Length: 401
Image 1: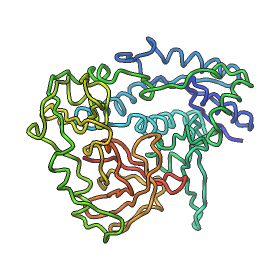
Image 2 (image 1 turned 45 degrees about the vertical axis):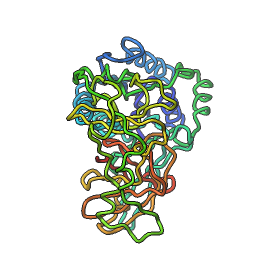
Image 3 (image 1 turned 30 degrees about the vertical axis):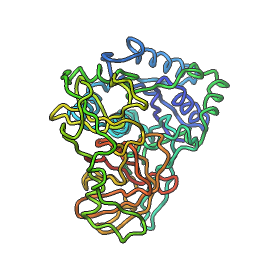
Image 4 (image 1 turned 180 degrees about the horizontal axis):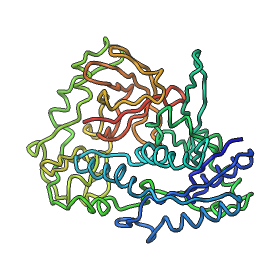
């Protein structure tokens, strides 16, 4: 049996993960991470991690396992939160949960676990791992979606490396959420009925503008409305799967985001800072009196202008292609990497819980391009596109402008 360090978070998922590992006969050590102290902008509780720690202690006592506490807040601030502020300031929308897994849970935390003599690190993620052995004896690790389609969290792990997966265990990945709750109840775990955490990883549920104002100042700017009839919508080239393979120039044109100027639309209101908003956002504008909701189409942080359009079907919300810079593409399974000029048929999601979308990945001199079978809503710079082959997550990349 192995020595396994479990990231006990004070939630039901990691609690059941620890129970299952102990039931299998492993030596289990719980490790609780303190990653964030500042409660500015949080919507629930004065110090949520204090409550989390109490629940982690209760679970560890019930399971009769050791519990260690480690403060990783400085690394978390530097690697995740500062990155998050910088991305919003630049007009991009980051995904701190993906970064938290890559930089904290499976890097800094993993190193702490190895100091305790861990053979593996386990988390309560709803995903699975399999291993194959190559002809030369090298082991290759595969990241699979969780068995519960409503809870699959593989997207959040899309930046993990083979070295990180080597140590990773996901004990509840084959279970459905109700089964996890049932096990926790049967075993008398204090977390059995505790609500799932929401919001930013280790920070919690926040009012984003308030949270961001720790570093980014309010700055009043104008909101301009772009109409469906904007002439440039009709000037963009079209492509259908029956056409010849797209040229580099066509892929670049299809992947380009929509760019507006104040002359393209009428001013209809003001806002408190373009960096507080993201493409596809509906709430927070405070502009009413419409048949349909207004949605953010684009933000210009340099000029501090927001462009909006009415209705979810607005043409400015939809694009057929996205681009990933060469250096921003990460192959979870390096055997699946394609060379310049090659293509790969795959399934893609560009946000957590989005149904998988059919697409073709093109590697060209200018970078990687994902051409979707159907146009996608709200393609957003800074977010991650995760690529799947059936259930296996094989690659991911940061969406560029």
